[in-house]
Image (cartoon, helix red, strand yellow):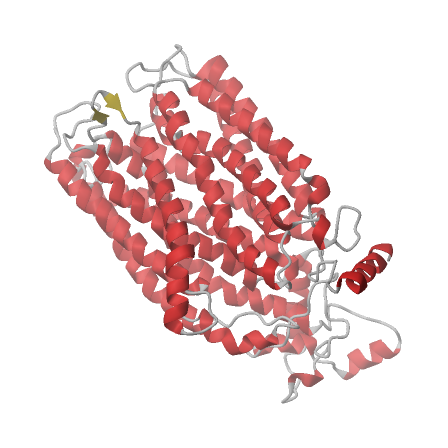
Amino acid sequence: MACLELCKEVKFKEGQEACTLDGSVDWDGRPAIRAKSGGWVAGSIILLNQGLATLAFFGVGVNLVLFLTRVMQQNNADAANSVSKWTGTVYIFSLVGAFLSDSYWGRYKTCAIFQLIFVVGLVSLSLSAYLSLVKPKGCGDGKTPCGTHSSMEMALFYFSIYLVALGNGGYQPSICTFGADQFDEENPKEGVSKVAFFSYFYLALNLGSLFSNTILVYFEDEGMWALGFWVSAGSAFAALVLFLVGTPRYRHFKPSGNPLSRFCQVIVSAVKKWRVQMPPSAGDLYGVDGKDSSTNGSRRILHTHGFKFLDRAAFISSRDLDDQNHGLKNPWRLCPVTQVEEVKCVLRLLPIWLCTILYSVVFTQMASLFVEQGAAMKTTIANFRIPPASMSGFDILSVATFIFIYRRVLDPLVGRIKKSDSKGLTELQRMGVGLVIAVMAMVSAGILELYRLKYARRDCTHCEESSSLSILWQIPQYACIGASEVFMYVGQLEFFNAQTPDGLKSFGSALCMASISLGNYVSSLLVSMVMKISTEDHMPGWIPGNLNKGHLDRFFFLLASLTTIDLVVYVGCAKWFKCIELEGRSQEKDDQDEFRV
């Protein structure tokens, strides 16, 4: 109350709101004062934290496929599958982090705890590599083979990398949403900054991985794996300390309780009333007038048409009236409209989300088959050897370039062409553009593989650098992937954050990461199916240990075809989608067509 009085006093003296309007609070649970919390001060701390944490994560992830083949002695197909499963697990854990964040812990506590787990996992991995895995010293450089490993050493290695997966996965969806929380979208100036934050967040993520994909990858490629892992651990620890230093400045949103129980209540209530005759007007539904319709301070969601069966959960029956007269309330029989609309919002998001999974199958090739393709090309330029995994640096440069081009050139240009107040392409339109560019990336990779095979020695043993075609020819496919990320993943982050209810913001970010997770699992499944089918009749298959005897180009063209089909389905889903309508923002209803493709 004291903070509210202070806000009113400042408003009276200065003629402006002192407190945020979106319901955010400070560390002590009082309404957050705009001038003393959040904004770009807190946002910049979170961006730096994300950059350092990403450096740490990709210090392990980007070269993991080579670590598995050179140190752990796995073949190409098994290593690619292992990386896909590990990366998929990272993003599956994002759902765990999002659930705890939205339901019980809040975003700040979730970020702090999972970052600590992340640091512990990296330290364990560094010790494992230093003490037992990289033996003899310097092995794993592609020339010196490593020795065999005991079951205990293998168990410690997998425990460590999956602890890293748990820490990073649980932290990622919460830190993205927590950063967006630092900007009050009800304030016009901060609302613009909030949209910009997602682009800068993804840029920070990529700049953080730039060091990993160049410097760290070079040392690891030369056999200095333990050093690379120790640098990652140090970077993760620095990120954790920086995050804690910014504590007094952060804005917070209170967790809104278990969303699973709220969802189940709506389904059960609707099923119980499946026989009732619904009124023609939605004005008679429970909570449509704003009374008892919000969840723990969250903004009220206006009633929408569609999924009308769920509206039965908000229908007030004679039994419900009788219970109310006796002061009783049964949430398993009667749910407010806002609670019903939460379920509708999630159901509308699912088709869009499913269409993003195949894009993630394309994206994951950059950390597996692109690296293996690069290792089979000429990697020496003027006596300097380019580590195949470091080629993803061109993906990062592409991301940075296209973020600038989009925000400074394309976005204003499209706005002028539309001759409206629109800020250019909508989130759904950008995601569609991302799918188109992803198809171009796979076509580029497939054509390059055809030419690589043309200049390859097929009688080689290990087949590293077996083609005279320079690895620099991979730049177009990496650049295309980077451009598609700017449109797909940045648009996806903005879209799911904007279209999820207040009590499910972390869940919205987790959906983005879960699509990457399932993309990795689908990629692993697809590789296994392709190898099983293509190795019949004693054929080497499309992706054998010796790529010169396979047809990796066919796999890339297969992905291009599947992504094209996915694009067609996505356009249909995007045309069907209806955006969320929040109280106080119903004027945006007239702009809903801006979300169409």
